[in-house]
Amino acid sequence: MRTSLDLCVCLLTLCGTTLGQTGVKVVVEEDSDAVLPCSLNTKENITGKIFDWRKDDHQKVFMYDSGIHSNNGLTGQDQQFKGRVSHFQDQLKNGNASIKIQNTKMADSGSYRCIFPNLQPRQTFDIELVVEPILRDRSGETTGASPEPYITTLNVTKGWLLVCFVRGAFPKPEVEWLDSAGNILPAEEPPVLKGGGRYYVTLKTTVTKTGNYCCVATQEEISHQIYSEICVLLNEASSRKVAQWRPATILLVAVLNAALYSCLV
Image 1: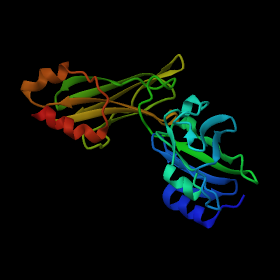
Image 2: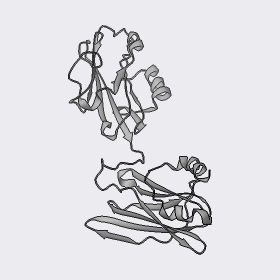
Image 3: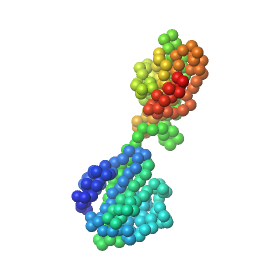
Image 4: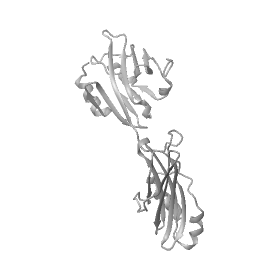
């Protein structure tokens, strides 16, 4: 199957794809949108024609039939794609049957085929979609994902000793302490225990400045990352507050500065 120069230019500039020996490859990050290209070389008007999108030869992704399509009456669309796939209505007159998949998931990765069953000769376009995982909280969706780290504190001579516990994770998590600017804090080599096929990690660090501090557990193998955060106020009036406070929210490091402001005021 040959692909026109115009299609190549479109893919490289608009879709972020590369052309390989087996067809077109589209690479996107998880949770972003993916455009899967499919355009006739003749650029003929396909408003009154049929085109059908399938994944891995059996999943029904999207179908268009002379103005009726999966989003306005056609049945049979696979549940995985319901409400997430759309076409480019204004481009049909130019022979463009491309689709957009919104909020991509890792399960969307695979081989896609765009089919024009009634054209003579019958035309098909093969596209490979690769959804690259991002680090995020996957609690409840991935077996072994680390639960929210638990933080406790101890008032010591030169500041506060912060202790982070990560319990029952698999695979083994990497645990770090970060300050409000996202800098990794020096910490003791964490003791790691293993029981029942799960890992239990304890990480300690001592802080001497008022600020927000975050304990982060990361499991790269399953693309899981989870946070707990604590606000430390180093003055006598606030000592009881710090000792009694326990984190209950998971925050991104990018918003720690905002939390610090609210803590200080």
